[in-house]
Image (cartoon, rainbow, N blue to C red; front, side):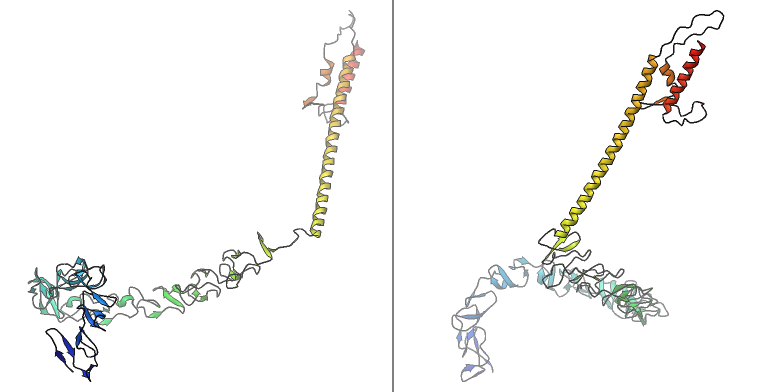
Length: 475
């Protein structure tokens, strides 16, 4: 196999049999004998003189032709406004942005992929690589310095060396796990690298410590999931994904468990959420993501009313917190406050009508009886009041009809005379008025006990008549 030069810039494959090339043609030539070049100068390979199958950089394959429509900074493109790759030093959808001056290639104005000067590094190629310093990063750091700021100021020493002053001058006999290879004269480390502990930093932290790090005494700052204890060497209880480092109480349960020790199982009717390790609350056990179709309640332990309508999967559907039928009632039932009740053609059947009629009649009779009783009481009361008023009038007329004679003057006997006194006032002298009714005193005629007659005011009349009778006798 070999290549034969046929022009100043064209070659064709000589790996051929019977004048036919088995391995294809070099760029710019076509099969089967690779003797003819592609007519389109942008073609890298072609199937006929005028049909390209692949294009050189800067050209785009369009309808079998390699057309030079890529922007000048595009290496490859799909249109004159969309580059698929840029020439070195440019970036952007149309390769229209220049990379920072120190960048050879970049993906953004602040992110260099490679630097033009190999002594520079960083997103903007503005820092010196390890072992170099200076404005152009052209100077070498002192011996044993991994990085430095000047010929006398090492910022980091190579492995096996420590800084004395500002230079990495002496090789250290400190254990290799000492940070900065710094230790005292006995070899005790000032501090340990992550993952090691002890005076000489020779012991490894427990692998169950979070991030594999621990304090100088080996105690873990925190444990990774599933472990507890000072050194994170004790496993959490079964079904406990994460437990408290000190007391072992569970913070996160798994495998559908709940409780302080993750020893209780969530209800099998709790709705499952693939993003959670348990379907119920770790403290209360109540379902967190609702219930599977056909159940409700805090723990999804109750069955939906069988009169509820069905969901698309044919299962009775109701609301978790109160069992309310989510799809309404099934056919033949209507929703009421009490739930789904049967729908009947006759809202009231004959027995219901009869019962309502009897109850209505009884209530009507009770109302009539109550009205009659009230009327009788009012009538009796009014008659009683009228009778009292009539008695008062008769007594007053009788008193006004009485006349009195003058008493002749007698020289030999004491003189008596009638006192101009209103007998009517005297009659009721010991009485009191109560809202339009004249009532006798609550004491008897003798003044020592209550009057027990049928009509109290008659007692006063009798006393008045006795007084008048005595006066007449005296006259």
